[in-house]
Length: 224
Image (cartoon, rainbow, N blue to C red; front, side, top):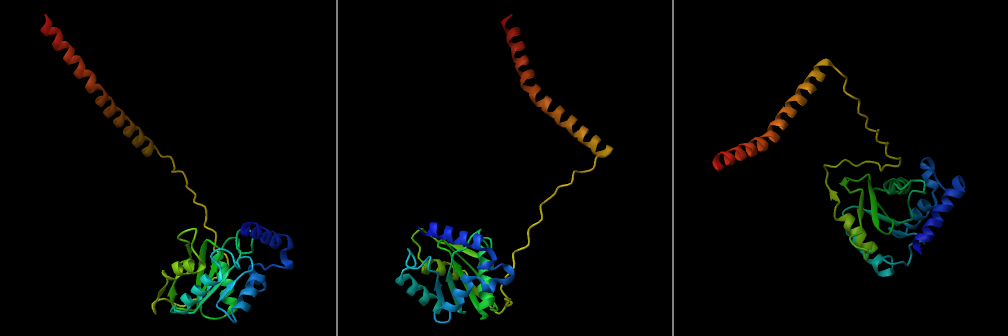
């Protein structure tokens, strides 16, 4: 059921376009970002209505989640939000976490839960954090998912605090391979190499034949 609702929400984002959604340039007006930042004023865990009460997001797992992040070495803000290819971030949940961080404006770790993975980013805090972690099982709760993520977070003064990323990652250039230029030297070398390999291969194949011929000849001489 949640997947159906997610598809409907994504469809609304596509159909309504700039009327109700945000592009990368005006992410602060994204309704998901607005709702999460507003919710964080009273609770560091925001759950979109799409996830509220569903498996893994019941009251007890959310209580455990709030208790877990209260013990974290840096402030942690969690948002369970719909995300995917058809949303403005185009399946880049880490970028969505960056939008949340910059809009909220407070240093900390910002995590986005989508029901099967946790993506996050650090904002103005000296930590090293993973990009995305995945639920250990299909029965994992929101508290379990966040705990898996936080277990990989490292805090140290060696890490430089940075502003969270709010723009898409640059596209990787396609690898191109230029053919090697033809030269007489390479042609001769390749020809000599082929001749040598052929000669060795022929010698190896000839050995069993010669051995068999010698054996037959000896048997004939012995039978005379």
